[in-house]
Structures are given as C-alpha cells and as structure tokens.
Length: 600
Image (cartoon, rainbow, N blue to C red; front, side, top):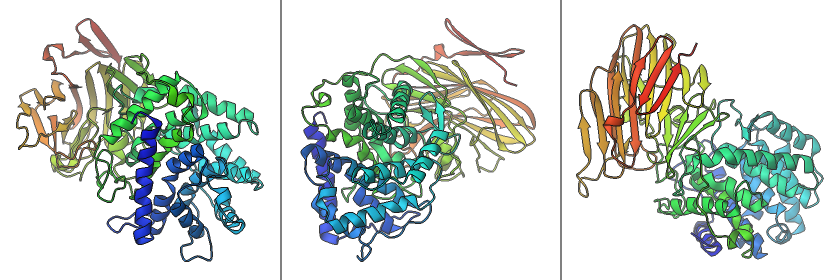
C-alpha cells in the first residue's frame, strides 16, 4: 500500500465483493448477526459506506460510481419501489448513511447527479431532505445534516437555512478548545473527534470556502490545533492506540489525515501526512480483517463480536473507507508524488488536556495514553473497558470482559478490580473528580457509593506508578492488572516466561514484556491470570495478565504498584522507589524524581 494504484485496487476489491453479492442475492443482508436498528438499515449501510472510497475514486477518474451500487440507490430512494429505504424517524441511523450521498453531490456531477434521471434526482432530493425534518442526537450526527444540505445546495436545491444553522450551532456548542470537541457527552473525547467532527468540518471548509469563508477558516485553524495533539496517538510503525468505542471502524482512525490531504491543509509537511496515512493502511492490511464473506468483519484487528457495540453491523466497518478519500486526488497531485517521511520528532511526554490524557512515548513505536475522566454517557457495551482503564497502548491493546465474574472472564488489564470476596468484580467507570498535570493524572471514583478511591497515575518512561488511596466501609478483595500479552500457541511456542513471586508477577513471549511489582499494600502475592480467548482486541489468543492481589479492609488503605510494559525485558533494578510523605508521595528512579502532592 504505497501508491494510488495500490489504494485503488483495495477499494475496487471491496466494491467488487459488494457487486458480486448484489448480483447473486440482490441484497446485502447478513443473517448471522444483527444490530439495534435491524437488517434492512444494515443493508443501506453496507451499500452506501463503501462510497467514501468508490465515489472519491470515481471523482478522480471523472466517471460514475459503480453501476450496480447506483441501481441499488435508485431503487432505495424510489417511494414506489419494493426496495424503498423508507421514511426516517427521529435519531434514525439512516441519517448517518446520508452523509456520503451529500459528499457525492459535492464532487463533480459525473459521480452521481448526472447519472440520475430527472425523476430519480427528485427522489434523491426528497429522500435526503428528510434529514431536516427529524431530531438528531446532540453530537457529531449534526455534521451529517450539514454535509447533506451543502451537497443538495450544490445541485441547486435551496438551502434549509433554519436547520443548517441549528446544526452548525450545536456543533459549535460542543467545541472544547485547542482543536477538541466533546461528542455529545462532556466526558467523551475519542476517535469521533477526528473522523466525526474534523473529517466533516474539513469537507465543509473545502467546499464552503467561498460561501462561508469565516467558518471555513475557523474549521481549518481548529484542525491545525488538533493535529498537534492527535499525532501523539500514532506510532512510527503505522498503528494507533486503540481507545474508545467504534473500534470496528479500523483505519477510519487515519481519516482525519486523509481529509487534511484532500483539503491541502498542512499542519506538517505533506510527506509526513502521507506517511501517517499509508503506514496506517499498511498496518491494517497485515491484520486478519477480511472475513469469509469478503467484507471487513466486526471487530478490531480480527473478527470479534464480543467487543462490538449494538450498532455494529457487517457493513459498519466500511466507515473506514473515509480514510480513502485521498483517491479523489489525481495521480499528478502533490500528495501522490511526495515521498513518505517518518513522524516528526515528538515529545516523550505531552499533556493532552482537553482529551484528559497524558501521552508517553518511550520509543517512537511505543505509545501510551494515560487517562482519567473519560467516559461515554451513552453507555454502549463495555464502556468502562473502552474509556476508563488507566493506560491504553498500541502494543498491548486492551481487554474486553466476557463477564464481571471470575478473573479469567473479567480479564482486567490496566485496572484495579474489586469484589466482596465473591469473584464478582467492579472497576473504575465514571470519575467524580479529576486533576491533570504534566507529570501525573489524578482521579476520584466510587465503585460503590461507600467506597472512595483516589488514584494517581505517574509515568516513568517504560514504567508507571499507580497509587490508590482507598476509604472503604466494606471488606474487599482487589486485583491490580498490568498489561496483558498473547499466550503463545502451545504447538508453536511453549517458551512464554511466566513468573509469580511474593511481590511481583511478570510475563514475556520474547516480543512483549509486562510486569507488576508491589511497592506497598498488596498482601496476596503476584499472580498471572490466563484470560479467556477473544478478550484482547488485538489478538484472539488467551492473554497472560500479570497481577497483584490485596485484601482491602474497612477504613483507610493504601495500594502502590509499579507497572512495566515494553518490547525489552524490564530492568528490575530500575523500578522507581516510593516514599510516602506528609503532604504527598515521592517517587525516585535513578536521577529522576517526581513529587505528587495529595489532592484535596
């Protein structure tokens, strides 16, 4: 995946799969899984989402979109057809899928508009206009209406000024500053900021640079600010840190960079932007992400329904094709002629204040995002695992619980899990208080109403310290989880290093190393938990999870641990030392020292 031709072939291979299935079955309905919105709307999603790549490619080639898909669209928008896509309700998933048709109308008219009869054009306008007659959730969805409206305006339909202004104002109300938006929930700042807000705001800025120059300029400026933070989510080898919901959208995580290239906006040299996009695509095509039906499967790096949300369908992953709008650029465009470059020199530590994260990069190919206070009010499946773990990593991914019962099913990596001695666990979800600093992140959280936990996360390059001040009215059992690594296949490699000692546990597979050490308060020794298969979003293997255990008594408790994760064996002599002082905590690692003042 290095040239435009490579990306074109990738798009065409998937469009051919869609075309073949439509020819054979006249539908894209999949019987083996379903969504909250049903199989009929799933089919619409499966037909339209590939257009993010196909319409872009058609634009650069000055041709129509695929004829089979076009025929399916003309039936879907025709109210007299048995295949009509129907009348929208409030907060309807079909409003999401309309956006790519708006984008197609913004491209040259050969792509879609001129290939419709006058009657079909009327049908398209009528069907899309429904987006102005329903209510939308107050989040990134308002950009779908915005893009549809400017697409319609581009083909001569009078703009619905009232609804357009309403949506633009709601988007504005979600802006946090420094390039970041909150996706409806005030505590949700994830990949939707990149592919849900900036992707569409950049399209708006590009197509409306003359009609709405002031807002276009604002959107460009915000994208430049965001780029300076968002680049810290990507590693030098092309992958990005998995975090938040909608991980099934896969390489949509680089769609922001593709939108920058499409709009010719350069927070970094075009060679750097090209490198980010193509390395990310190359990383993804190396993963087992082509399912037996030749679609992108539900899951992150492999087919996995366990980690999915209720709105994930077999067609959902085509949202990833937003990253392929670079094919709208002609072969002689600067982007395709430029030579890829590595990431620019990035800081080893950077506070991403609006995202409530601290980025740590001990090596260019290792990215850790420490987080506190992120949480999605929508309560999609596995919310806590996707937003509230202590540290997220490109190397280790994160685990999704099969259940909250038993250590192996709960698979609690990068979290403190607590039970009332019944193996039914609770862990951090929402935070009642947070504090962000250049050297640490603090949070206060309540797994039960009468159990207060005040957590400090302090990074030391490859190591980090976790401090938990616990005030409890209950006797509890605590399990502190480090990073998990894939358990090697016994027929291929039996050399996994598993070490369980009185004050630490440690695992390795020769490529990844994870360890956890008791610095204070853990009294049940180090244990390595073997998790259920398909819990980690990067690998289907069962995971090996180093952990510490503690008995937490009624009253005040203090737990302190040191956690290591990396690609080289840990040097245990370099473990930061911990000292409790009157007004705070002091950590010392060789010449490095960090003092954390007690919060509150």
